[in-house]
Image (cartoon, rainbow, N blue to C red; front, side, top):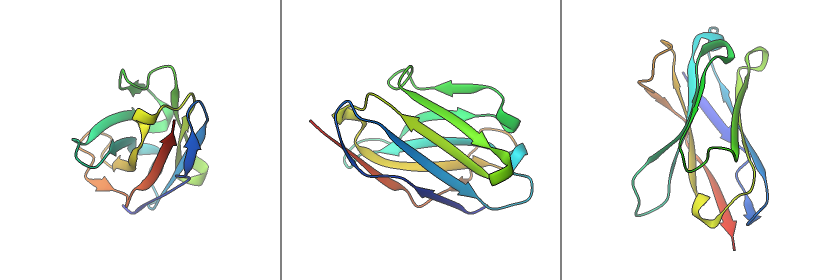
Length: 118
């Protein structure tokens, strides 16, 4: 599965961004999709995940209430809507997928940079 992210940018604190991730494959609706992030010098951090066919969603406590994950199975695309952004959200955001519908995330995108200025 190939994943291509887009939408990363520089934004002021309090602003919003929407990341997109387009996936290859014919069975996208069965994939578990998600987002991780990593800032240089810090450990990679789980952000959110959405199970197959727009099912259950889960969020890290640090983004709960501010970020929303969604998917459009007709477009093979998953989105991450990020609101009320903080400087602490600055990181490279990676789209991930588990084509088996689990949470092993064996497919990763190249990453997109999000920078939040104070």
